Length: 234
Image (cartoon, rainbow, N blue to C red; front, side):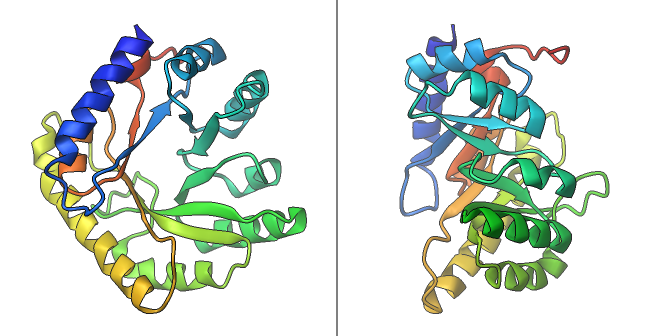
């Protein structure tokens, strides 16, 4: 079942990418394995999926340990990251999607520097100004980015965005497009200044990944469409 689901999702991503404004039509699929057991990760891995997303540090650490024999697997932290959890994660995650405040940046830089680790990160942007959701609002983005760029142990790779919950993903199309414009603006600015590697826009989940890709996303986070109904009792 997981293998068939992956094939379908990958085909849908490729079709959506034909309409992407990105010059490079390649889109990275992060299989969101949060709440699913390591056996589900193994099944997806055997079907060719190598990138997995988790949103809680302890759950991720447990599953990463259980899957340490899967040599090509990489894990991303996609959930809200508490500063007091940073000490557990140097060298654990290939990419952290949810950096959104200076206090977190300060703690991450201190911990990663101590361990000699350079961590790839995305900044989570709260484009819709939702009070209940993490992310930095656009008006404060410049200040946070400048702070990150002074941190020796953090490598800024791009942005992550979570839109408001809507029944119809078309209702968020304009936000995906606006987020791509923001990403493209900073990418252009960074490239002009000689900075390389700002190349990732992570947006789109199970309900809306096609719309997100059509509007410029090059990394999507899909869980239930791959693994099935979530088990929150794990």
